[in-house]
Length: 118
Image (cartoon, rainbow, N blue to C red; front, side, top):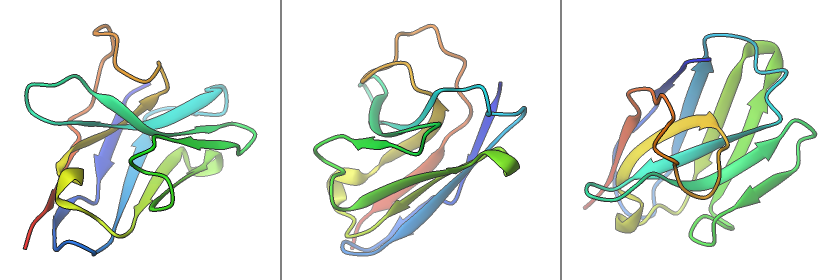
């Protein structure tokens, strides 16, 4: 399954963005999907994941500010980001959840750049 992300951009601190991700195939059979982000020079790290049951889990940095959702009927994954901080600046990716950090064996999409700056 390939993923294509969109919705990033430049936003001021305290602002909001909604990221979207479309999968090339059905995600019905993907038990857990997630959003990752990457800062240059560092591996991709998970910020949120959602199970097929709808249960969600967030990295400490995202708790209370980010909301992940998925629409299996549309093969879509979303990340609502509120109260954005400069530290949230990164390239964001969606993918089947593989752990808190990428393993190096995944096939990632292009991602979408999020820049939080005044």
